[in-house]
Figure 1 (cartoon, rainbow, N blue to C red):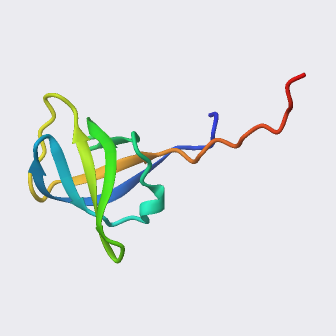
Figure 2 (cartoon, rainbow, N blue to C red):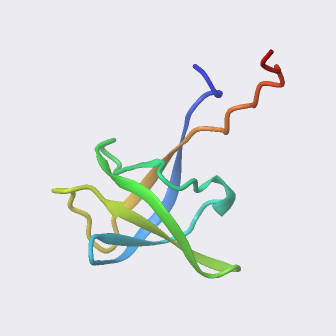
Length: 94
């Protein structure tokens, strides 16, 4: 697979849902939280995408933009599909 293997990482439990965004207390290294990455529930159903990181550096929260029709509630666990960044080619165009 291009760009390396994809991992499924538990990002944490939903603390609340506001205006189509799930607020999740971060249980992962936030450096792996890439904007736009797919977010799934324990049944591996897509619920949304990674939107932003907020809060204190020592206790961050993650925002997940929910997909239309997705349903999550306080206490639900969510998972991120993490793909390592692609390596840039050092070939020059001529």
